Image (tube, rainbow, N blue to C red; front, side, top):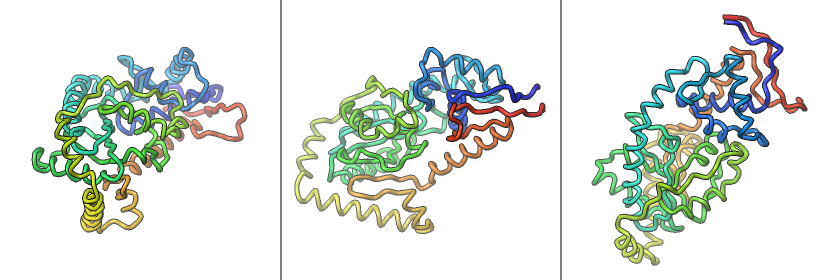
Length: 331
């Protein structure tokens, strides 16, 4: 196969396309034309012109296309798997909507969004459904604890359709961590309960637009109502007092103590990365998936640059914002 020659240059849009495909390749995830456009990071590119850059990258042999999905060279098998998952995605969304009706029925739950792989229209056979939950201020730990008890008693502690890893209250919608992984998770969230809270959340995290300037807000097509609205209102009245304040504080402290005991082998730095245990937020990511993903992306990016002699990193000294493709040898 003839190598890429030094005469070729890559525009910022093409560099962004490659970086996007490299990032999603961490998850073996090919992207459609629309998905690529929405997740590329170069401002000022008209969608009607975007196909030109895709065509150029295909002519260079850097990317491929099949069934309307784009992928890095040699990764066509990922297209087949994603096509297989389409039926499963529909099934998972039906289950997610049903489970959301239950989650939304719990006291002080104000918003529910789907995150993780399903929010990106993927559903592996052994995958689960991740939810991002928004609660009333001062009652986050009551909501979370009740939901955890429900999962243990009625779902036998199964995470498959009921994985609740992130909670915030509706006065703390701004996500402090800012990187590619967090931005990706934010722009792909799908609202399932309370579209107004979803729009407030997106407004509070406009910084994600720096990574994804073209990413649209998700439609509220899948939004549902609580299954037991009356019971929810009754339960909220029971805990909407000083006793509720004390109970919420107590449950937060008990959860923190439990996490510290169970994950005592983690260093302080590792523990703070894996968990958030505050009055206004709870995060439970003991496997540190975020750092693993970013590390793997950087490794893929470096490998791709070395293989094709392409500079994918932004060069501030390059006033024309173009990226040289150096001469490479055939293999």
